Amino acid sequence: MKVMDPGIVCFQHCGPKIFCFLLPETCPVCGADLSQTNFSLLPFRVPYPFIRASQYPCSVIIKPTSGDFLNDYYNSMDLHIGVTTSTGTIVEFDKNGLRRHRSEQWNQCLLLDQVPSSWTEHWDNTLFQVCKQKCWSSKAYSENRHNCYTFVLTFLMNLNYGNLSKAASNKTAFCEKFIVPRTTSAGKYISLYRKLKESDFYVHRTPHGAKGAK
Image 1 (tube, rainbow, N blue to C red):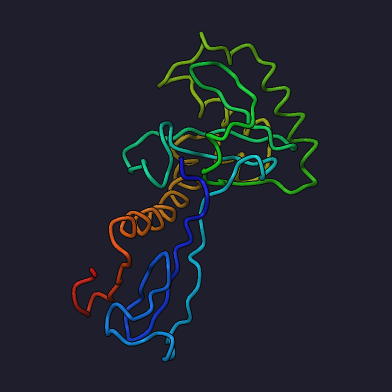
Image 2: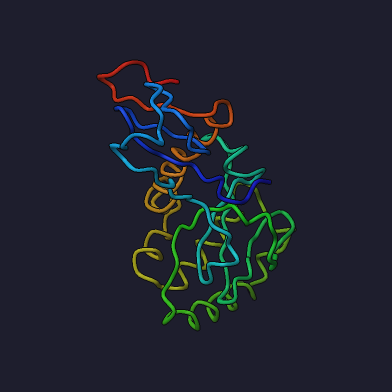
């Protein structure tokens, strides 16, 4: 799994925005020598939307159930949700029951929310109490009725942390408020990444311009 920031660069020279992994010697649009000319938008690195879960304590995190975001994810795919402890240990519930680990499978995930340090003790204590419940066994797991979302939303409702816990009372509301905005934003990055895997650069033209491909 590719977990490191691939480093997408964006710049403008003669009009449209150009995205690439490596800055070319000449402008892909007009052919000008980029070392001898001015940019209308200086090259910058496009922010990488994914995180390594173990580096984000007391967080709610999400990833594809299978594969990773950059290479495997599409909108119709299932997502898997979990949380981290104050030390960055990942806690998740799936067909194998309740698990605590620092697996590399969570090295490319989206951060849904993170509580401030003043909530650390309460977060860990609440998580400990929820994990003690006997309903998180592998035998109790049900893909549709008693799954990873059930576990995380149960924990968040017990946490009583503002809008995060309020939204957790309804799976649809939680999805609309915390998941859809993150996956939509990440989707733009994923689309760019996949275009650049097929070509050295991608030219993004405005709708009133020419066709938006290389």
